[in-house]
Amino acid sequence: MAISMTYKVAVVGAGFGGIGMGVGLRRAGITDFVIFERDGDVGGVWRDNTYPGCSCDVPSHLYSFSFAPYRSRRIRYPRQAEILEYLRRVAADHGLVPHLRLGTAIREASYLETEGGWELTTSDGRRVVAEVVIFAVGQLHRPSIPDLAGRADFAGPSFHSARWDHDQDLHGRDVAVIGTGSSAAQMLPTLATKARRVRVFQRTPHWVLPKPPADFGPLARTALRLPGAHHLYRRVLYYGSDAVLAPIMRRGWSARPAEWAARRYLHNRIADPRLRAKLTPDYPIGGKRIIFDSHYYSALARENVELITDPIARITRDGVRTADGAHHAADVIIYATGFRAPEFLVPITVRGRGGVLLHDQWRSGATALLGMAVPGYPNAFLIAGPNSFNPAGSNPGMKECQVDYIVRCLHWRDRIGASAIEVRETAMREHQQWLEQAVTKTVWPAMGPNCWYKHDSGRVTNPWPASARAFDRALRRPPSESFRAVPPDPANPTDPAASEPAAGIHSE
Ligand code: NAP
Image 1 (tube, protein in one colour):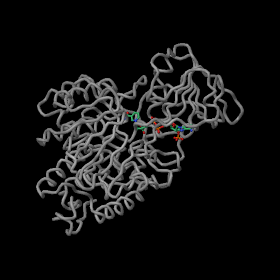
Image 2 (image 1 turned 180 degrees about the horizontal axis):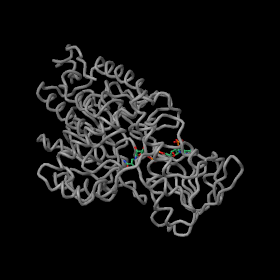
Image 3 (image 1 turned 30 degrees about the vertical axis):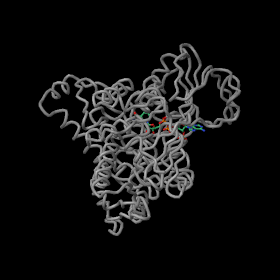
Image 4 (image 1 turned 90 degrees about the vertical axis):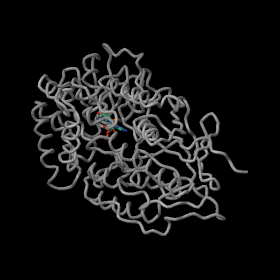
């Protein structure tokens, strides 16, 4: 018996990707869709991360959707609360509220061979059927807490940076911060003014570059009054980050000016040569996400802040013991230890054609055409999937490119009268070959295992290895070049595009 579709499209996740997708669908005239969100609010990482000092190191004019541009003459870099408010407003202004199913996590997604659609199972066992499923769960949503010896023995409060315990008053307490990535760097200046003592445990130093003040000065505010100034500023930021920041990840001379600037900055900010040596990375700039922050080094140089670089041996009842035998007292431990970024779509079980498990296919690292679609999984799309994180620019912008492409795929599917479309093997292979070649030109393959850009297998699975413009260009190509129609029923094959050869989708 045929199963009737509940929805045309089911979107999973209501962060930047899911909200952008919802708006894209509505703007395309598709209103029969639902957005599932495991939490009780929209916002994704900007809802989850509420640590003190949480903000975005990408300017708000760029870190926003083109269809809902930031028009602030005050804010240059948005704080967490402002971004969360922005996403709530976009959802409300674009009529997404009736489509939201908050507090509904998706546990399983299975392709329905006969109907060419997807059956989704929620964590409380309900079933929903949709023609198309779009996973927009992001890359940085599952906290990673290292399994350090003795972790359970700690008697005081401990929590991850993305699960901040606001009931804990840190005034006058000894705080241990494990990790020195962007989250730790952003929280440290506030923690240092509250806590009695902050001990920062660093395994690997990050490269740090300063950034301008969070708010615009009087001159910029006046300039932003001019007609077209906001739009022009966004364009300058877009092309500027492509021209200045994207080359930093490449091997060779193109990163040297940035590395020189980072060394100068460290030299100017940290007077103590021993501390400076501890903070100097031994890998090329761009190997890990650069920290853009102007207050981290000065916070580290405070009297009540200590940087500890001896490896952690174990957590004790009342602190952290390092491999040199020293014990560092702590009332509270904060794990600023990042996310399980290479584990795409976990914990959702995804079954494609023939019941094949997506995570079996991804055992040695996730792959997807432009971070967006996988052969064998018809009518399924990802936003911010493998190798589509932009370490040098705006991720909302990358997601918007994927949203536009997915909408065009849906229109193409309707136009050719197919119930399901999927990426051709040839297009996927060609993309993967290009990607692997592009990755060899970056500094990432030489990085060790402690880098969230890489899967345990050593494969670079998370960042996009070229410019934002190259991503945009690749996603402007017609879907017919990379997708094919899947016959819904063997007795009625409709595969008008199946015989077309895959064309080159990358022009860089
Ligand atoms: P992260 O960059 O992955 O940093 C995690 C830190 O924890 C690293 O210093 C890491 O050391 C350390 N760590 C992990 N396991 C450890 C262990 N077993 N022992 C000791 N140290 C350990 O995480 P994050 O700071 O939360 O940032 C994650 C990403 O979120 C960033 O890269 C960025 O893309 C994004 N973010 C963006 C902003 C923004 O303003 N746009 C702000 C915050 C975060 P190793 O380096 O040695 O692994």
